[in-house]
Figure 1 (tube, rainbow, N blue to C red):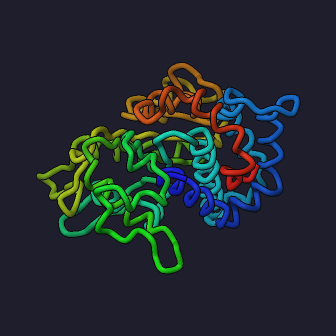
Figure 2: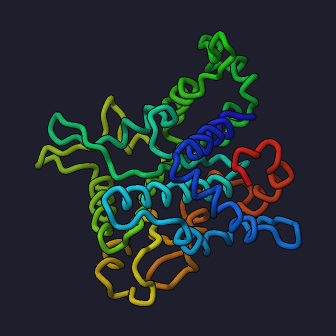
Length: 314
């Protein structure tokens, strides 16, 4: 297993430690997803990718805690988790990982570059998920047991005494060295489009403007900024909870996200001038890390979904 797939496994394993996600998965989602992707007992890359058109309905079938504050929070967490699961499943055997916000999994240079400073105070961003497109070099494709032999790691101990791989330390070294060749896509996931559309619009403006110096707002700390990386984009992914038939291209919520640098998506088939299916995010934002293409890489991984990739819990 290489360091990219090791990180992916950590991210997905963490999802199943979240009670709301794990409960919905075991009681509802797993069966529905298997019904969608297995056709006559066989699974193919296209059926997995097309799952993006059905995630909205699959999510809505989850047991709802209602519109209380805790219920809304739990719904947002499970939607975020479902998107994270889907994207990473489609991206196995590629150089792209979608990371749910967790300090243990996020390389420090990326976290530093995304930190927004209001004067001397750091601000947490609306970055529910962060997709990282790593370069195609030996350090990322080599088995983790061989990394110590590579020049960048010869003087760095990569394993603890109990043989646990120090993947975060290794990623920090690699991302620091390769930042100019790494792409970042922030993905904000919300269940309610109308209430939240202005948030990604404003964060996309802040990031792409690299801060507003006159108001003492800046982006990046510890000498990392978004300029340290090859490409940055910001995306929005919604269910949404509102009636889709009432959403028009002229709606304020649609206008607010129509020009996001990374695109506007939902868990349904693409509707022109409103939202793209989440399955369209791969070519738009991750193509540099998918060789030769998403269908081929996913097809090549399918024989191992019950072994090497069993942590996806199908």
